[in-house]
Length: 157
Ligand code: 4NP
Image (cartoon, rainbow, N blue to C red; front, side, top):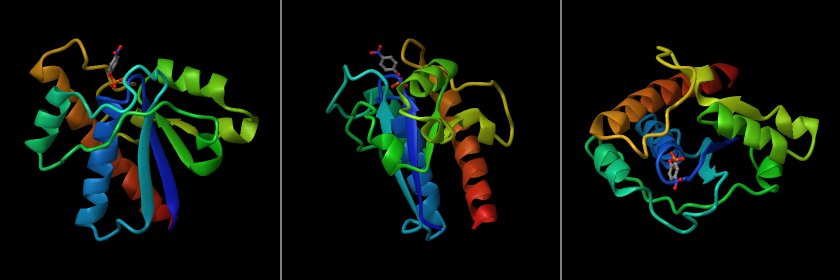
């Protein structure tokens, strides 16, 4: 298996870097870090170069996940370089569909909640204007969906 995953949200400072960190953590736990490459990006470039939001870093660290990604904007070359491009919500999904250069690229776009074992919502809600419970909800949803996605990748081989 040599799969390249790109998680995408709006700012690339809350949901998608957390998804990246959780997936990297799961891969390491299973000694699979060489098998899957993981990155994240945002459809909005306003936080370019920034570490993830300090609240998200603090909540993730309590679960043993350190977030060190630097925010970057999605680029058209991402559609060539990645096998699966995974959107956190409908807005991210439709923005990616509009950015995709061709139908083959559009076929690479998924919704994070497609992989949830225990679906709570049909999207991963933006926690930016919420309190601690919003960040915990996002991390619970991402742990569940990353586990489901990794299970699918292992099944496919
Ligand atoms: P994210 O959260 O898309 O999960 O990284 C957000 C971060 C920043 C903004 C919006 C959402 N913002 O508008 O600055």
